[in-house]
Amino acid sequence: MTWHTFFDFSTMSHRHLVFVYVGVWIVQGSYLAWMLRQWTRTKAPHA
Amino acid sequence: MSRPSTLRNLAWLWFAATIAILMFAFRQAIFLVPTEATMGNLQRIFYYHLPHAVLGLVFPYVNFVASLAFLYWRRRDPLKALSADALAVASAEVTVLFVGIGLASGMLWGKPAWGIWWAWDARLTTYLLLWLLYVSYLLLRRFIPSSQTSTLSAVLSVFAAIDVPIVFMSIRWWRTQHPAPVFGGNGSLDPSFYPAVLWNLGGWLMWGIFILLFRFALERRRQLAEQEAALQAIEASLETPQ
Image 1 (tube, rainbow over the protein chains, first blue to last red):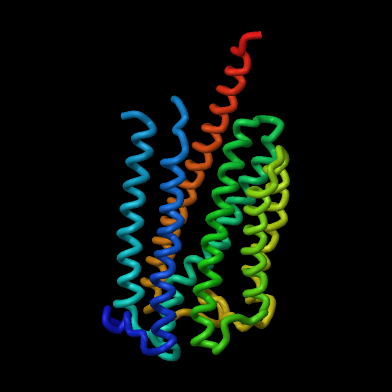
Image 2 (tube, each protein chain N blue to C red):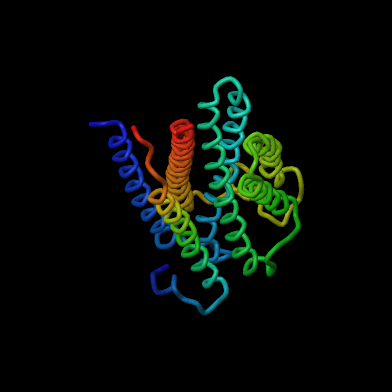
């Protein structure tokens, strides 16, 4: 498989393959981004 | 070097190694392993589906152990109980994330492979139930503001964990639409696919550990900020002139 055939949207199988690989990164990345945002908005405890 | 900065450096190192392994695993899964004979390129979904589905059965046990620790320590050592509670909420969130992705990627595979999005077979149904149990766990924590919420959610978690071995054994106990076990079962995987499976399993395990510990650290930070705010409020009320 090549990048060209990876992004081939002509069949449902190919579309779903891309949806899974891209979707997983988007969901996991969004969760990490949400945690980073909460981290910066939560006051650090005094040592 | 102070301890927090050492931990931060270790976290960055772990994160960088995780991303590198996931990139390598992606290359294995998409470009290097051979195309499966019957399903073609659709089978490559398996390399992302399997790690999420498997890890979705591991993190509930972290939640289970943390909840038991919370129940044990809640009267004996409240500070340790708070840490256990933070680990419980972190692992419950990560469970919902991984099981959710396992379900969604399975459905995206099922539609082109079986012609249906969903089948109410034992594996899929018990796995959906697992996801719903941990969603209800998080909703309980979020929307029931009570001093007993942590205890109630810990008890719920103990019951939720019972579903995990049922999910695991479902494809052995019952005939299901879901394929048989790919390691040591009837649906044995060809060894040529092992590199993609193992690198992705390892990479997503490292990712899962990273986000679990980060979420735990965030919850501890939130707990400590709450404690400080409560102490400041008490001190302020004591300083109020009579």
